[in-house]
Amino acid sequence: MAITYQIVGCTNPRGAEGVDYACNRAVKTGDYDFRSLAEDIQHATTVTKADTVAVLTAAKEFIKQHLLQGQRVVLQEIGALQANLQSKCFAQSVIPAESFDPSSYIKGVGIRFRAEADLLKYVRTNKQLRRVPSELLA
Image 1 (spheres, rainbow, N blue to C red):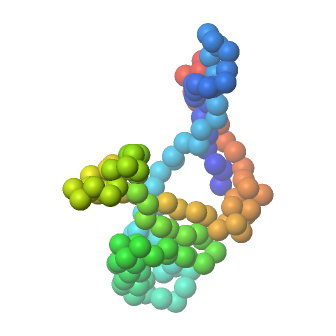
Image 2: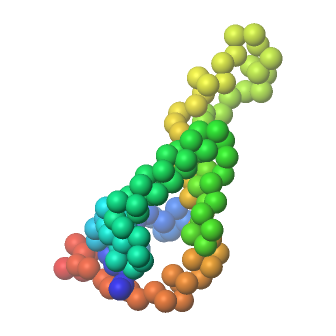
Image 3: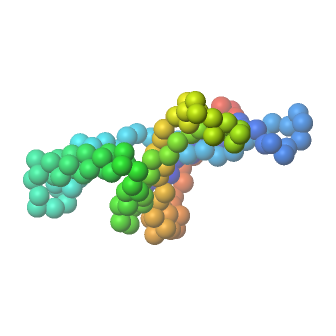
């Protein structure tokens, strides 16, 4: 198994004017979906596929519920999920105003994932790289 990457053009904010820059970016090679995960768990254990799907579905619903309650969801040895907001900055002088609505400054909602240290260490020490064709390497 290898992490697939491609060389792509990029900008360097501290770079010299008129110089083209390139960098390596990981490339998605496919999706590992819910069904594939359930099948892999079924084959690796004595649990039936129906039971596996039921447990994963329940876990998904509980994760969504607790994220909406503002809790950080910790998946041991994998990482943690937490809801976050993207917001516009505003002057502190408008906060006391009676008509101030902080939700009007929220641009979006996302989910932040922070990988567990052991998982990061494993990926970093066991990585293999494979370059795919790039327009920059013609």
